[in-house]
Structures are given as structure tokens and as C-alpha cells.
Length: 194
Image (tube, rainbow, N blue to C red; front, side, top):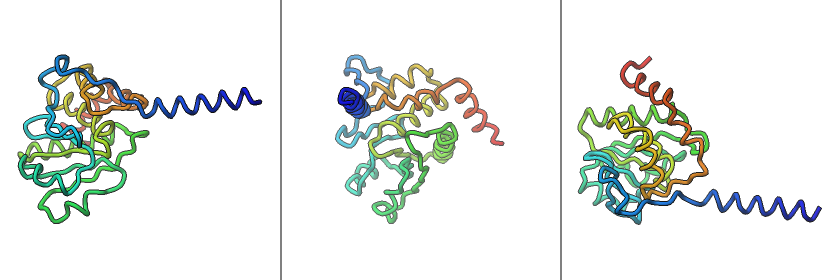
């Protein structure tokens, strides 16, 4: 019985440690030039495209950076809405799309893509974030790369996992979202909503 308990304890501890690990980042020499560029590594803030940014949960202290980059819309992917309090009076469009990392779906990513499509059509700069700016944000940015920028699945997933954003490989469900049928479905929904 003692051996069984010790085995269970070791498995539990190793799974806990593995869940906290993030994918290794590629070095600056390995990073393709088209990957997101760092603005502030401390808050996981990167510029993805001329109008799209990604970060961890922003605070009111980020306001000068948001203004400097003319960000008009903040898309919050966290289950709870932590943006209303600091940003409600700041003349920003606050969009809340609650996503749970363990159950992220193609419908969730479709909602994000619809918001990005609308913002792009209105020439608005957007900041997209979750708590750490790693997994939910990473999946959303990877799908953006595929849908809007024509990146290959492999290139978008490489940036998501190795771009230095802290992607956690324990979320195998996220990578599974990038099956060709899901990508095709999202494209179809954006062009011909049913």
C-alpha cells in the first residue's frame, strides 16, 4: 500500500510540474522576422501586425502604451471580466469573450475572428489578452495568422508554441483545434455566416 501511495504521489507531483512548464522559446537568431515583435516582455506585450497586439491581463498602468499605439479595442479572453474596472472610462471598446483554456472550441475562436474582422474593417487597433497572454491568446493569434494572413498551420503553431509567449504544452486540446476542417469551417463562417 505504501508503494502504491508513493507512486500516486510521484505521478501527481510530476503532472503538476509538467502543467507549469512552457514550451521552449526560439532564440532571436531562430525567430522568423514575421513573428510578433516584443514591446514589453514583462507584461508579455507584443505587436502582431500593424494593428494587432497581444498581452497578458493589462492594468491601468498600460494606458500610455495603449494610447501611444492607438489601441481602440481590447478583447478579453478571460472567463472573468477584469477590464471594465480599469478601462471603463477610457474611451475604449471593451469586448469580453469568456474562454476556458481546457475547453476552448472552434466557436470560441470564431467569435474572436469575427471581432478581429470587424475591427480590421473599421481600421481599429486591437489588443487581445487573457490572464498570462499565453494559451488562449496564443490560439487566437495563431488562428488569426492562418485566416487573415494566410500562414500555414505549421508556421502559426510554431509561433504560438515557440515565440516566447509562455505557451503551456499541457493544453493539447489547443493544438487539436487547428485541424483543417476547423480552419475551413471558421473561414466559411466568416465569409457566409449561417
